[in-house]
Structure formats: C-alpha cells, structure tokens
Image 1 (cartoon, rainbow, N blue to C red):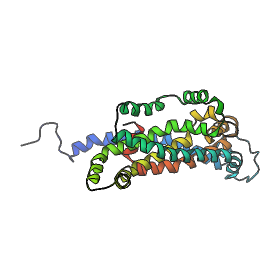
Image 2: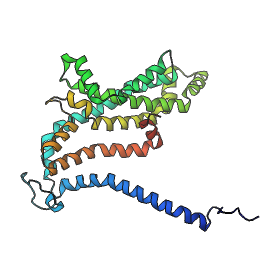
Image 3: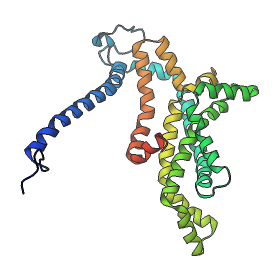
Image 4: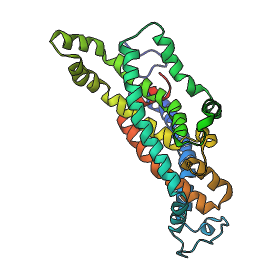
Length: 288
C-alpha cells in the first residue's frame, strides 16, 4: 500500500526538507540570544584588562601601573579598596549556607515526612518572602530590630529570609520523590534506631538535594543587593553594594574590574550548580 498523500516516512527527503528550515531558524535564534547574553559579559571582562581607548571608550588613566594595552592595575586598585566588602560578603554567603543546612534541612524533613495540622500552610509561608520586594523585607527588619540596626547579623537575617526557601524546597522535593518514609519504616522493622535511620537512610536521600540547595544559597547570598542595601553600614557593607557605587561613580575600567571580580566569585558556584543539579535545579528555581 502506498503512503497517504502528503505523508513522508521518517528520514525521507520530504521530511528533511521541511525540518531543515525550522532547525536553521531555531539555531539562529538561539545563537542570537546566546550572543546577547554573553557579549556584555565579554565586554566587562575585556574592559577590565584592556586599555579602553582601544575599544573606543574614553576613560581616565590616573591609577599608576602598566601603561601598555593590557594591565591588571585596575584589579589591584579595586581589591585595595573593596577587600573588606568582599570578605564580608563571603562570610555572609558561607554562614547562609551553614545556617540553611542547620535550619532548612531538618525543617524540610518535618514538613515532608512528619506533617501536622497546618504544615502545608507553613510550607507555603516559607516561600512567601520570594514574592516580596527586598526593600520591604529590609524595612521590616529595621523596624523590628531598631535597637540593633547596623549590626552585621541583621544583614545575615535578611539573606536567610531569601535563601532558606530554596533549601527547604530542594530538600522537600527530594524527600517526597525518594519515598523516604517507606525506607525508614523498613529500616525500623529491621531494628535500626532513630539515629541510625537518620544517618543511613534520610541523610543519603537528601545529600544531593542539600548540595544543590547549598550552591543556590551561596550564589544568591553572594549577589544579594535589595535587602542588603538598606541594612548595610559603612563598617558592614556587602560587595554588591560597593559594586553599585563603583558603577555609579567610577570609570569604566574600575567598574569593569569590580564586576569581573564579582563574576569570579559567583560563576564557579553557578557552573557546579548546573553540572550537579541539572533538571532538579530548574525545578527548585521555578518552585516546582
């Protein structure tokens, strides 16, 4: 029997002729979007080491150092001024990861495996800060802890408000997907004690999700600006706030060097996150 009119079997010239233009169009659009995303980053990185006059941008050359076409003097200048801010942001990011593991993992375990009346509502409440503007959260923290305004730990509290939901979401999703409750009951039937069940059953089940959540928390805390901006003080200032001031008041090369330093801190975490997390990372970011 001959194929129906207009039907081309898979792999036939007719099918290939129809899909080739669509493939070319999709590839062109994808390449254009990729170029639009990558090009500004490349300009930032190149501008941090290259004499911007070669790029057609006028920028002062008042920082002493190499007078050649390529120079690292702007990095030295930024690091000399912003090292305290870098260290403060790094400390906040590391503490955010540690506290999210201590608070978020047990909390996620209770919500997923030990539900109680109102636990579903509590789980939704944990995610509410993600829909609230950061400036609103910072004002609320300032009003609630007016006597302690200016303390560094108040900035940390602002970071935790936005990072704990990601850890909770990652771990609860992993617990529900792996049916840990059934595994726990089986271990209990075999005589495993509570500590042994947590160590041998629960923790291995959430280890990967906790790693994904930790990388997300680090990246979010490192780049957090909205909450930190009002909570910062001259003595306790995050690097994103200093980066904003650099782009506002300094030359292109200084701001490019500052931006490149910021990317150097966050890109490794994001690359590892995509490698480790994959589709799971997309689900957590989208709230699935």
